[in-house]
Image (cartoon, rainbow, N blue to C red; front, side, top):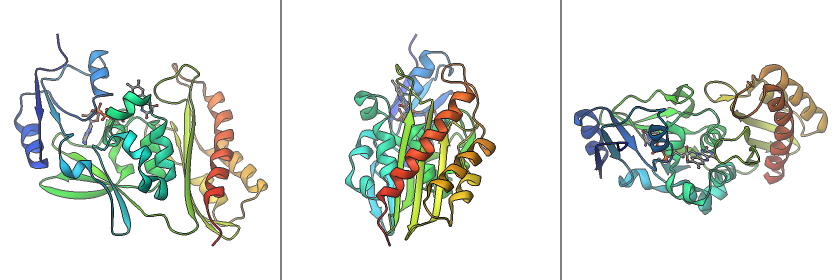
Length: 291
Ligand SMILES: Cc1cc2nc3c(=O)[nH]c(=O)nc-3n(C[C@H](O)[C@H](O)[C@H](O)COP(=O)(O)OP(=O)(O)OC[C@H]3O[C@@H](n4cnc5c(N)ncnc54)[C@H](O)[C@@H]3O)c2cc1C
């Protein structure tokens, strides 16, 4: 038996909403299908009757500067994001994170919207967008609504999006002098999908001081969470080893990593978190110019 009965390619958001409300249930949005189809085939998702393909909606395929922000459409393939000069210029963490997703075939099909909408707390692209303090755009009741990306997550694999709500894209601020970002992760040696642990950091420098910082580890809970207590330890202080060591101690005390059967023990994740925090923090800092 196939994974679906009807496949509908739509060209506009209104058409997508109409189909989502009227098509024979169960109905699901499909973008690259790299998560959804596997989940259906492996029995983690019920078989769907209707799939609504959103890859041909113009607004969802844009990647461009709009005012003081960069817009990335939800249906943009992650390979395009990795290679985009605009993304490299304004959010190197996002370019790095998307460049590590799967292999080349997966990256050509997978979209950033699917990476976020699937709501897995370790998804690489999503974690980097959280560090960029991204606003998500949702098409809802015939209007575009902007919400903080963090509000999209309910639990592992569960987003807050309703059946007829479509994730249209993402906005984050253009890079300003003194700002930079970085991403890195640790995979199992034979791993192809999600990492054991990843880390994205956005930083703002003022001379030798960390003026502002956002730190995100995935997975560090059922939904993506900023390591806010660690940010507080670093914010306003010099980029010196003593503060990095204090940040690592605070990380151990305040961020909850758990043991997962398929990937790693909590203890091992704490060891990796120490390493990643120092590595990603230094990488982001080295990318800032003195202002
Ligand atoms: C071999 C392999 C390796 C992988 N490696 C990694 C990895 O290293 N890191 C990583 O993070 N991920 C990895 N993935 C997971 C996957 O590729 C990504 O999560 C991908 O970005 C999902 O996007 P998609 O377009 O394929 O989503 P789809 O599979 O099409 O959709 C995923 C979910 O999101 C919903 N959805 C999609 N688009 C929208 C939208 N615009 N609005 C509302 N809902 C939407 C769908 O209904 C579905 O529930 C891997 C997958 C495979 C198969």
